[in-house]
Image 1 (cartoon, each protein chain N blue to C red):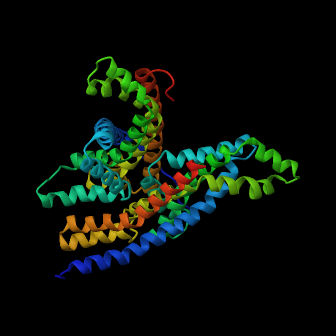
Image 2 (cartoon, helix red, strand yellow; image 1 turned 45 degrees about the vertical axis):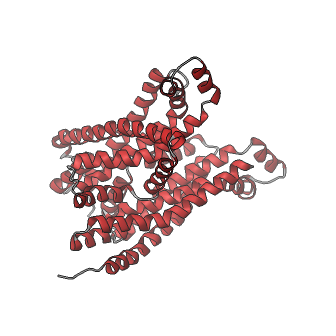
Image 3 (cartoon, rainbow over the protein chains, first blue to last red; image 1 turned 135 degrees about the vertical axis):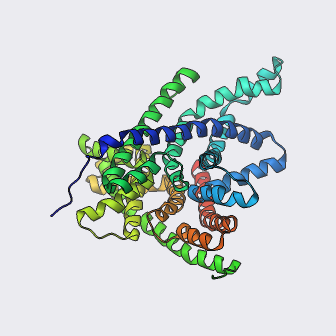
Length: 222
Length: 215
């Protein structure tokens, strides 16, 4: 007597899985945009801001990098309401993901900024550009090009990590898998299928980011 | 209803943290052993063996750890094994760690100049001796910083085993939170305990990295 696999439920579940995957993609899209923006501010602040700000950003990065994402998520979703800040699950998930990703990408963006030769800034200033223009038009594009591969990896890692936001009842891919297996009693098959969907998403996302980066940032991005 | 004082909470969390430490160690040691096997496959001369190892690594690096744990937890009983959360947690994290460690060490092997292999061969060493005496010691030495860095990631990843029911730090904190309704304090303390475990290792990895780049 053995266990026999049964995938008969799959046909009826495709829509639910697709909906979950769409939510996962929405989460990572928002996180990517907000996280990258935040990390550009963070990296610039860590280099040129006033001393207390530099210290604060440094500690922020350390705290986020040395604690589990799941605990950060619980802290934000369950802990913040006691300060009077009540977020709905999707917002809490986006906030937690953004804050977590920024801690990693602040370092990445910072490394990119450091990699741009000082002469670029000097040349741009000599041409009469204002400091902000120098940063946005000269330094940042070059930095982003250098760090793009590292940024891509971080985005994919974050997408995979987003599976845990199912724990605060965000209806993304993992949450739908939990619901499905409770209904079908086919836990292994359900998680197997959803794992493969994640694998496809991570490979597709990587490919999309690489080809998109090549188009926007120019050749040489891998 | 039982009243929890602040120290009750701290004490219970610290007791639970022992399981987090134990699980991290077990997974790291298990992951290193399995990772070594994956590494052998990954740097083998045979193209197919290599491809299998690459696929293994890509599979574990391309799917969420939470899914891997679920598959372990629900999949192993189908093979007739009775499985407890602890077993599923250790096995799941072991395989997860093996893929990452194999890939880290593989980068170390690749970084060594070709001449190291040639020199070994010219001394009359066979393949396994070359690996054991010349290649692996150097590969481990230059990848010490990312290896420690991964240990930090592994410690943080043990938090996910709370979801499959393993009683470690996070699961205990959920229970305490349900009894005390003080999520800010409870999860703040949990974060602090994780930080105390991980931060020294992060600093250690950083100093190793500095040493390596100073050479």
